Image (cartoon, rainbow, N blue to C red; front, top):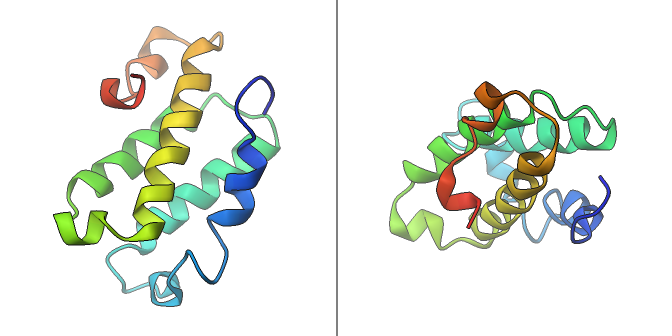
Amino acid sequence: MNNIDDPGKYHKMLNRKDILPGIYLRRNHKFHPLVCCVNNMIGLSLAENYEEIPVIISRAYKILLDCSDEERDQEYMKVVKEYLALVAKYAFTLDLSDEKKGLLPPSLLQ
């Protein structure tokens, strides 16, 4: 991704052992879908395929909203929210359809 604050640091950080709890990688864990969304976003970003990123951001953000305050305070969740906001702001500047831009949570665009 170009023209945004170093997304590469997030691409690495979001999968580091000290940030990503290994239990989240288990298919039956409640945050496994969030990890999948984040890694799909990383893959799409690296491929510069931004068209579907708003769909993934929307899914991931809904999972974050369903977290308890205690869960949201975990380091991984904080980094995910920063990354979602970073990518959402960038996606909003792209030549995407209004439908796709409408999927971006307004609170991430502030």
